[in-house]
Amino acid sequence: MANTNARQLRKDLTEAEKALWSKLRYKQLDAHRFRRQIPIGPYVIDFGCLASRLLIEIDGGQHAERSGEDGRRTAWLGARGYRVIRFWNNDVLGNIEGVIEMIRSALYETPHPNPPPQGGREKI
Image (cartoon, rainbow, N blue to C red; front, side):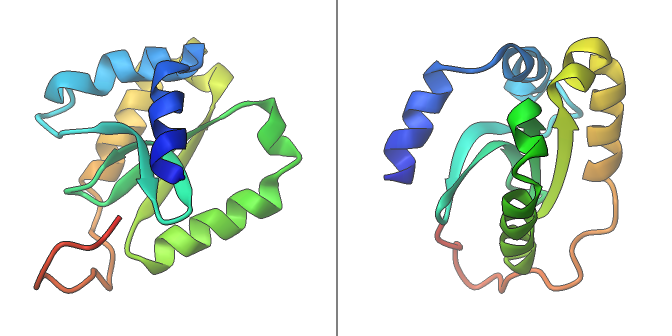
């Protein structure tokens, strides 16, 4: 079900998601490969660089009321070795270069202290 939902979300990007995707696609950000609308477990993540285990969420006004749900989602992903950074729609639309610099900085931060085992691919 997450795969079907992700496929539909890829077709229906918000304006903020389109703006950020235009800066992340085709390895434009220091040759890091990003994907969009990635199904991971029960969730669909807006953007992610899986090699760096960095996930990016773009939040609209509806997320102000869902902070508890977003916190559980971030904790679930964190327990699986992912780092999640969040931006508001208006930050992406009004300061895209600042957002890109924050993403770049996050890509080069120290990796997660408990990465998953390297024996095989983690099922996402």
